[in-house]
Length: 457
Image 1 (cartoon, rainbow, N blue to C red):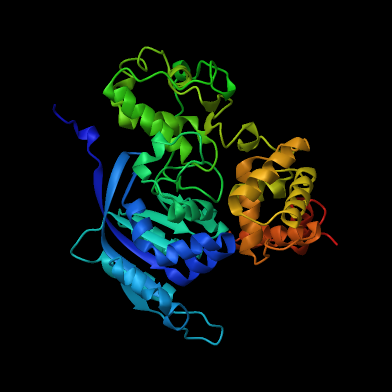
Image 2: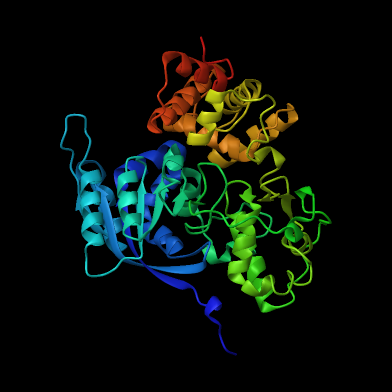
């Protein structure tokens, strides 16, 4: 049997640059087990990154450069793990009284040298928790190189306009602890979804990879003739009907990978483009006889949720719902300041009342149960739904990550006011990081809004 070009994954010559200290600290705040897995098993997550997909199809990464920048006076015990995994470990001792190492400048210098090297690197993969690598990402893109940012902080939104792909903190935690190969992600059953290698673009959120390239044009009217919202119309408890040919099977797998590895609903046009990339003949066959993309999606993958309200979204119905749709969760019209905060920081657009329910529920949960990133998120989401607050699972994850990032431990009982203040501090920090010019009145208004009125005192 002949093999077409579309069956062959592209090979990217990649340079992997890891800011160890920042990533380890960022992951430890979010998930200590993930931090240890990152530090002790680099070979495992390196293998996960080596295989994956992006909007142009499946890719294989050849990491021609593997560099880890590490403070030896603090983290020398992890050096052998990275050396064994084929990394060049660069010692970056602290050079200031504040304890800041020279990892940033060493990483940037090596990246600039690699841009000028005789070997042309197709992609630069930068792993860090800092939001200050934007100039480096811009420099790489100006030289026509792909840029993938993997960050262990809520700073993912700062990179979306300058990087081709962004992997957020939750997705990174899942990546370093998963046991399945990313290529098996589209075959996962009803359990927790695994995380693909970077490149699959999710919707808003800190926990998933986001492709910053322009989304594909919206499907044609024929592709959006359905008006379903929620699980695709005609969904049943049974598995989707088998694809009728190898091309359609590739398209189905591409859609599943695209949606199941996202940290929220994915724009409908981007999902359609993923299917077309896997099988360009789908348009010529009128989507395998279905007449349009949405009709094909309904027939082939009824277990996915679909909304055709412009611009349209598709989501994994096992993890998300309509409350996770961008702009679908606020029960009041946001102010101009709130709209700007939402637009530039990805802060969820909940109303003050919804934030109050979420923050009080989170505080009650960590006071009653041991904190665990996944199970706590699930319980809080379910409790918010029962309380009548339309709060999505991705929003809960975003808030938990933000609270942990500013240093508030959730491993012990917390008062709602403490959780609210930590979350408000995180949002204001994101605003300042995005170079928003906030007056004292603006900061107070943001604090009152996202703190649910609990952080004002």
